Length: 403
Image (cartoon, rainbow, N blue to C red; front, side, top):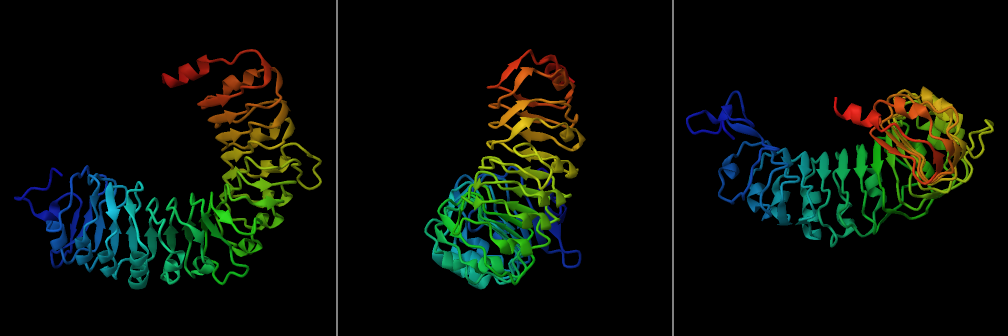
């Protein structure tokens, strides 16, 4: 912090903001500032009674504990200590920060929370709108501790927290909750409520958790403004429901690594705003869009998804040709079709936007199409484990990389 010199007004220091009237320090924005070492409890930082915003994210505090003295900053509205190499237990004194609207303690698995501290945080931080605790060890925390989360909460992120047991559906009923991230908690089970009183939810990531019923809850279809749904690895089964096509605000839909079977419904072609579709690693033995007679092939209705940039259909039973209509998807950057039953390139001519093409472990035969060398932005190509002849023009990669 080169500007932090005693002969310079601290309000002119990098990352420091002061109140224009009183001159009190109210904001420390010190993320990614190469700070290292420890923060002792007698640090000057804890003698800034008017501080409202403190961001220490992405620094290196040498596995030191989070100081109890943070609890002295009673006017804090924003506190971010994420990914700064703190370690140990989160101190209960943080629950004294009753004015907090945003708290982020996410890290690398070195910080842990106990049930008693979670209860105090939930009880006292009634103004919280954002709570992010990704990779915080909560293996000993009772899920009932979250029962009284603030109704003002708009974003809750608990990815990879070693949560265990069944999550109360109260969380899904929080009236203002827009984003909920629970991914990578393989011992966490949940059940989406049958009736939803709140329609605020826009983003849900519950990948690699356990859904109790195994079927995609119909009540999700009531969330008309839903934009992102990520349910990878949740052991869902049965057909992909047609009502997903009613959620026309979707920009990302990830149903991969489940046991969905049968056909992809024609209704998915209604998702005109969709930019990422991933249904890899399912049991979709018949891919059939309505009466289009594309049984077992990639459905032509995908051509309606003009904003699509990611297409994941790996590990299914897709047959036939790679369809030429994919050429019309001008924003497509990534195509994953490995481990299917594709037999022919057909009239292969993808858009130049393509960066990733994975076609390994199919039944492709014949000559490698020369049009592959026209993909000027291609950075990854896998056509291994097929019955192809010919060569790929490796020069197209080397020329681009030297530009």
